[in-house]
Amino acid sequence: MARARDLGAGVLGTTSPNPPVGAVVLAADGTPAGEGATAPPGGPHAEVVALAQAGERARGGTAVVTLEPCAHTGRTGPCADALLAAGIARVVVAVPEPTELAVGGAERLRAAGVDVELGVEQAEAEDGALAAWLTGVRHRRPHVVWKVAGTLDGRVAAADGSSRWVTGAEARAAVHRLRATCDAVLVGSGTALADDPQLTVRGPDGTDADRQPLRVVLDRRGRLPATARVLDAAAPTLVSAAPGPRELLAQLWERDVRRVLLEGGPTLAAAFLRDGLVDEAVVHLAPKLLGSGAPLVGDLGISAIVDALTLTVVDVTRLGGDVAIRLRPNRHTGAGRTAHGRS
Ligand SMILES: NC(=O)c1ccc[n+]([C@@H]2O[C@H](COP(=O)([O-])OP(=O)(O)OC[C@H]3O[C@@H](n4cnc5c(N)ncnc54)[C@H](OP(=O)(O)O)[C@@H]3O)[C@@H](O)[C@H]2O)c1
Figure: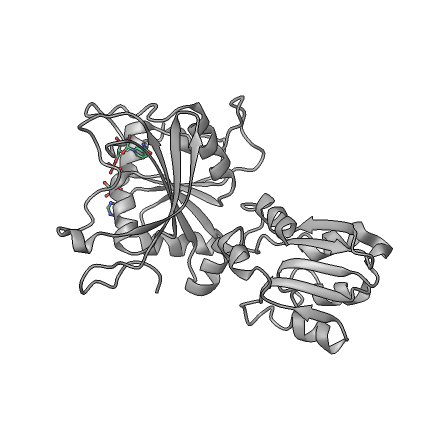
């Protein structure tokens, strides 16, 4: 199952609106026979890729999958039928299918005599590559990852507006890898005007990646100049005048965006946090002090410590001289406030 999760994580950012699923097929004697992950939309699902690789060795074997095999015909046929046709005897699943549309795979397999186990290492799979897709199923909106790079005293730019480079080369390379796992990369008009970022995915040598997320600028007053780098031909761009975060996410959902990287700045990040629309945070901290300059996040409307928006640290890693912290916002703990966190 750990291998299946890794396979799913390897295609994160390439499968939307479909879930990034990983699958491993073991032969009857328990040896690995095939593995696969969801192909881009219209292509085969993970089970079908793994079965094709296993061929005849799948007969009497086991399929290990991060999400319950589908029972419906979409752009491809039902995976449950493909498993039956291949003669699979046992199916081990992490996450039961949560949508009405595709549910029924386990039932169909069991009815045909296949041994099906659901819920194996389910929490690990739900927190991994499937997290964004599950946010979409539960809340009918894209999953939002807020990324920010700041100094130890929480400044994202110096008093003179300069912000290049707060963090070092390793942290910046990690941002490009993070962008590659997302369907869209978003900034507010303030950041687009101050920094003129290109918002593309580039490799260590500076070349553009083959697949580029949609670049999005929230610019309600039409201040973005036609010469902005984000409008170049390197990737598609949406300049939105949506009145707020929720309306913007609805626009992105319609474009099949399921995982958004919110790259700032502090004003837009605060608007998303106030509306409870941040699902994950990736904070890069540089061991530097500025003492003044733009803060990590703008006004959250909080004046007492008991009302602080709290987050849980998921993990901490070192990136060269900097530190990366992955966090998940908790439900807001402040007295009488319930607007934050998951609903
Ligand atoms: N180190 C980092 O990681 C990092 C990342 C990003 C930015 N920065 C720094 O942050 C600074 C820019 O910060 P900023 O706060 O001005 O930029 P911002 O958050 O990118 O943009 C703010 C603008 O977004 C628009 N907006 C759209 N919807 C909004 C809503 N619901 N609520 C509030 N605003 C909304 C508003 O302009 P309209 O009314 O025109 O729509 C607002 O003025 C720069 O100095 C930049 O270098 C640093």
